[in-house]
Length: 276
Image 1 (tube, rainbow, N blue to C red):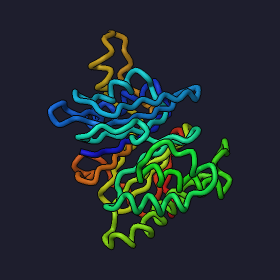
Image 2: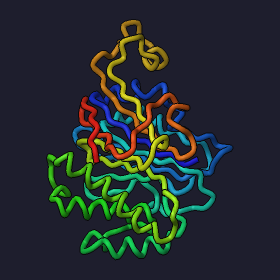
Image 3: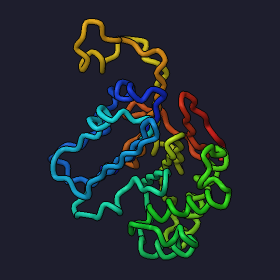
Image 4: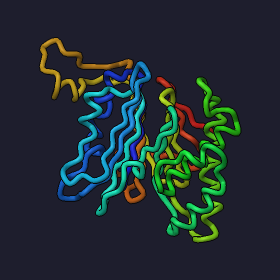
């Protein structure tokens, strides 16, 4: 199992309420491990908690962490791994306030890493803590952000960031054509703590669920808030869940597919599709 998850919520205190029906996607059973996993969360007032572990032999439950930390935006990565890796090699990867996670990779990592490193210049090349192809793809994305003056911008041009995300995949794919002709499926997710974006290279490898209010009795409140005056509905809650999985189609999880050549953009309570 290898899975990446991204989330954004207009009401961080209620994030777990919206994601409760999909809580099993944040979990891994002990007998299927061991796992490598990472979790990056952004919560008001712009505090960032980053927790990750290189090898875990028991059960993984990242939903429990979300319950306690109430993230506004978050990225998670869960992977079955039979060898320990340093924390720097586990996504989500971070540079300043940017977090990035990627699903997919080429079959010849050493060659691809050489080519990617040659495409990354200056301080973005020398400040790479890990040693993975996916983190180098992240820094290639940062190069595009820097070229368009979005890297340090507080209020980013969303169109420019979306194009940078798609162009990152296309440049990486162009390099990979020299080592393998077949299409390499990939899902890329990124957040800067103020917005969330996701890009899929093909259909049926990434799915999303947009929760626009909980108008029926809330299952999370029913199971966790044991008060007679508990709030049963959350009509103003707006949350998006994104799941990338190369093995299971989104429809099998009750999710809608993310179409290729469009970037899913989410900010506060606004979801938009940006053609790229």
